[in-house]
Image (cartoon, rainbow, N blue to C red; front, top):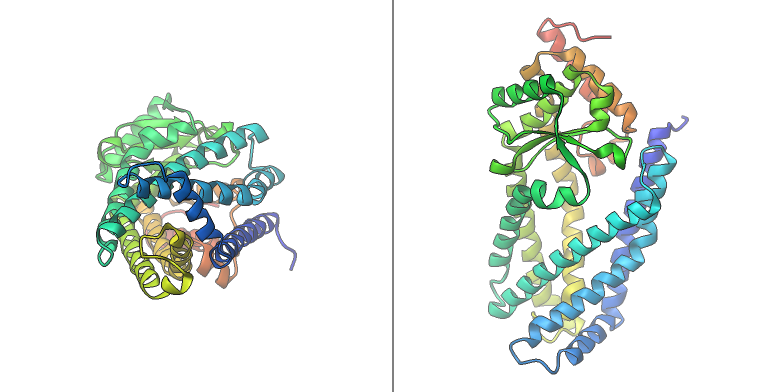
Length: 380
C-alpha cells in the first residue's frame, strides 16, 4: 500500500524521536560505565575545592549538571534540527527561518538548564538530608512544580515564544465566553495566538489555571475556519477542564514520578556500589537516575496514552453536547486533520505506543454516531 504524505511525515518524526532516545540512553550508559561520570565529578570537586564546606556540595552538583546538560544538548542538536526544522519545512508546516528556530531552541535550552539545576540541587540536597526517605519530599516538590507551571505558563512561558493579542472579533469573543460559561469554566479572556508567524498548523487551547486561565485561538484557525468550527474546537478544550482532566493528569504524573523516584532509590541502594558510587548522594550516579527515569517513562507510556485517548473521546462527546453542531465538528476535524497532517491510519502498535489522541477516522465515526442518535444532520 502506498504511503501517504502525512503517514511518511509522522513515520520520520517517530524515527527521529526513537533514535534520539536510544542514542541519548546509550551515551549515558557509556558515560557511566567508562568512568567518564566519575571523572566529571572529580573535576567538579576540584573546581569547588576553594569554597566552604557547606557550599561545596551545591557547587559540585551545579558544575556537574551544567557540563552534562551542555554535552547532551550538543550531541542531540543535529537530530533536533532535523526533527524540529528540516521536517517541518519539508512538509509545509514550518514557517520559521533557521535563525528563528535556533533562537527558540536556545531559549528552550536555557529554561531546561535552569530547571535541571533546580531539580538536581533539590534532589541531591534531599538525598544528603535523608538517604532513606529523600524520594518523599522530592516527589512532592515535583508535583507542586507541575501545578505551578500550569498556573504560570500563560504569563511567564508562552510569551517567550509567541505573541498574543485580545481577540478583536467581538461576536466570536462573546460566543466563546458564553460557551465557557455553559461549560462551567470561567476564563480571564479570549486571545489571538500568533501561531502563523512560525507554523502553518492551526490550533486552539484553554491554558492556565484559576486566575490565569484563558482561551487561545491561533490566527491560522481564525483565518480559515467558521465561527461554528472554532466554537466546536474550543468546546473540546473546555470539556477537558469541565471533566477535571487537568487535575487527573497532575495526579497521574505525580504517581509516575513517585514510582520513578522509588526505582531510583533502589538503584542507588543496590546498584550504586557496583557502579563505584561513594554514597547515594554521589552526583556521579546522576546518569543512572536519568536512565531509570527513562525506563519508567517508556514502560508507562502505553498506559499514559491509553488514558489520554479515553479523555479525548470523552471531550469529543462533551463538545458535541455543548454545541449540538455535529456538522461543524466533522468539518473542523477534517480540515484540521488535512492542515496539520494528521496520521489518519496508524498501525495498532503505533497508536498504542505513540498516540495520545484517537485516530481521526474514529473521531469522525463517533461524531456521526452522535448525530444519528440525536437526530441531527452530520454534514457531508
